[in-house]
Structures are given as structure tokens and as C-alpha cells.
Image 1 (cartoon, rainbow, N blue to C red):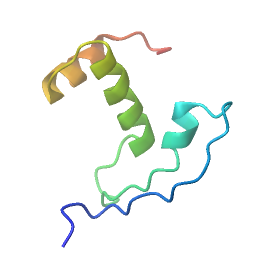
Image 2 (image 1 turned 60 degrees about the horizontal axis):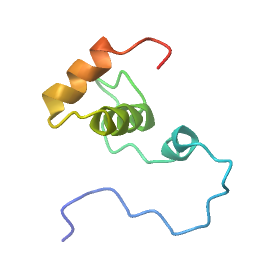
Image 3 (image 1 turned 90 degrees about the vertical axis):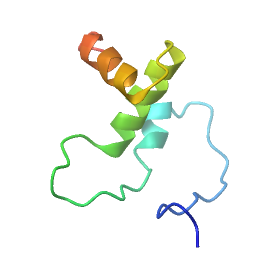
Length: 72
């Protein structure tokens, strides 16, 4: 039995002009409807940016997101 309930995406070519955020919008959201405040693709994008900026924990990712500029 796999450890994740999320199915692996099919390997398809991605056009060069496709932005990461657009690609992340396609990620299926395994969460239940109750309590969802943000799209899963946006959460992953924030986590990726925070880690690239040096965040090394979930707490650090949250802090980076809270302290970042709204346009980001």
C-alpha cells in the first residue's frame, strides 16, 4: 500500500512557457472540504519559494509566508 493517497501525475511534456504556479494548480487536493482556506497549489508554491529562500522547517515556511510581501 502506498504511503500517500495522492496519485502520481502522468509524465507529459510541459511547455516552456507554463509557469510553476499554473502547473501546481493541476495538483489534486486530497484534503477534505472543511477547513480549506487556500488552494493546495498555492500552498506548495509558497513552500517551494520559502525553501529556496532558506526555510528549513514547516515553522520557517509559515514565518516566511507571513513576512513576505503581499504581491509575492
